[in-house]
Image (tube, rainbow, N blue to C red; front, side, top):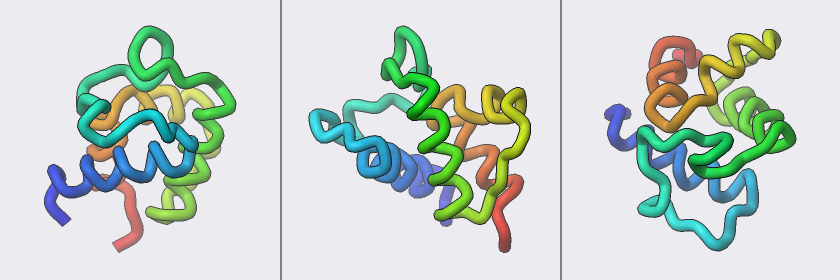
Amino acid sequence: MEIAELKEKLKVQIIQFLNLTDLTPADIKNDEPLFGDGLGLDSIDSLELIVLLKREYGINIQDPKEGRKVLIDVNTMAAYIEQHREK
């Protein structure tokens, strides 16, 4: 899968997993922070995103510090998936 395709798929999955029904993939910029002033997600959402990575990509994030490095924006999530997903 191309990285651009992966980013679009991630946006759809983020909307579905977090039940962000008022958003479309076009509303989420690749470099927009997922937490705080960006998309405005919270700590519960971060747990949901970790579940998404495990369920959809076989990526298991145990360390909260690693999670904070991965869940910055769509770009960092896609890059991490590309490096770590089960082939």
